[in-house]
Length: 492
Image (cartoon, rainbow, N blue to C red; front, side, top):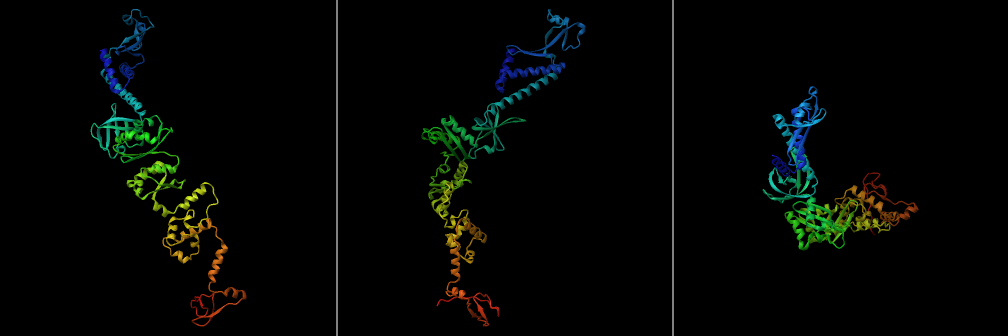
């Protein structure tokens, strides 16, 4: 019997993953609970195990005189005690073994239920502690079944779940298929322990590289950041802590052995490994691989806006299918990257903006004089482009235009023209004397005697072509008949 008990405890420990000490403690608590239900008090109950795991329960009773027994559960008559131990004396304590047959059926059933519940709680706590420490690690299981898109994976000691949102869109599974996944969550639920797995998390790629690349595992090569579109493409920025180790080459491996192992595990997902660089321009160039970037221009460092210039033949490669490559590059470098060809870059005419950015960066106040409308800081690009399409490139050309000609320009409103004038007043020094002289010259063109006439006080008079009344050059209508007047000068 003792051998059977010992073997049962050992088997239970192996099956449930519970230590033998916890099982023995559970048996002890179960017997004490049955004793309490049978006798009403368990303060004097003692449970002991021998070397073969055989269990016994005793009642510890105090020896009293025959007439002084008040509590039969905790006290025993001297005569009865001497039948068990001839040397017993009043005041001593004696252990009396309890026959399990004395427990009624209700007490036994209650003890069994308590034992099962205790073992389940112990097992849940033990598994929770074990798997909680494994969050972020890779585990291997086997496909069991699928329900509402969620895959249930046999992990040996328990069952894990692989939700639909954590499954790669290109992967399909069948019963008993081997599944390698990342443990992302471990939760206690009323129905038991829940282990959530993922194959789409970026840390899943990181963990695979740690398995396949020893330099990544020992931190010789470190992963700066990973961005991923599960099932399609992953971009990986790495750097080395040692000058003699090439981070990209270490991850690729000899003849691509290491990277091929990772691609195989990800079911053919494309992986771009690039070198991290603290300089944003070089980092952006690397991030747009496999496309070769000719130049990177920082448009707004504060807003993290940059422009990448590539050749016409590499534009589609830099952008990627449905914009995937440039979208992942944006997330990797945390910049908003706009990809343009050489021709598109020349049309943008942002050279002046780049010069100003450099000038502001180094505090150079003696920058070039602004002469073009497109060089004005904060100018509306659409307004500048519309003016350029109408042959108005320089600020000087804009200032001499009449209101009628400006109003005739398409896609430019009066409000936008007003904003442009404010920018010119703010950033361009205008010589007032020259403008006034030009305006005066325009008004007196063709009338060489006007200045002399004003000095002598003479005013030229004409006759109204309608009624013959006297009129002067400053009149817009005849004072006599009211007809509208306009004056034209003819060259002699």
